[in-house]
Length: 347
Image: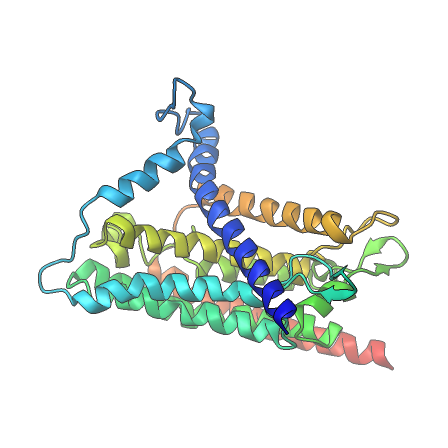
């Protein structure tokens, strides 16, 4: 028992350290990648001992700035809820990672260790539930700020989550019908085969439309462009976090980036084969499996930042119409098509 507890603790510490480090790195990547797309230098004004290092020191400069800025609560705002909201958003963002596998199981001292903090046979449902709960932090932030722009941002966030959560869940139904499990580790292992002897049996090849619908719903779920209507600086100043500063603002930003990582990790495990290399003869176990998994996640993170610098923001009525009149009906029809295909294949 003590060995198992120690293993769980080590996995949790490793994962949290990696996530927080990647979150900090993403703040630099978003600045730098956007600058390259817009033909400018980007972040490069925080040198240490004359070394600029491509602007990487801006990560530390931002952290210092957040620590020393005034921690402001607006007059008339609810101090308790204003404080709880960022911690709520960050807590559920981190909890989503508990059931996510990041590699195949390994054996240490005769003990089988799953590279997953909390192995669950309903891991997909657990992750979707944790991602849904994160909206409470966003809504509380808008509600407690005593600011009309923040309040409107919180309302937008709630309706947007309800609308696109349906699509995100529906896109996974076809995938679950094919593989027959809600366990993410088992889903990863099931995608290790080949179709027709050469095509990886990944979810993206079995459910191409499902992957596109999932990615679109994921963008809306985590408030990424072109679905960032809950912030919408041209309309709502900064939306639900207009009245936040210092470390409370930093926690909200961390939660947003962690949610972006969560969607990329979930898409990797569900549709891109997880830790499977997909190349016949190329191993996918141990460190190599973790490497394949990390490369896929990094590629999807690149696409998220790429979309922000490419696509214009929707109007709010367009956002809701797209969710209810396009994505949800298409997802429902795709479920019927998949069910028909599975029924025919099983005969």
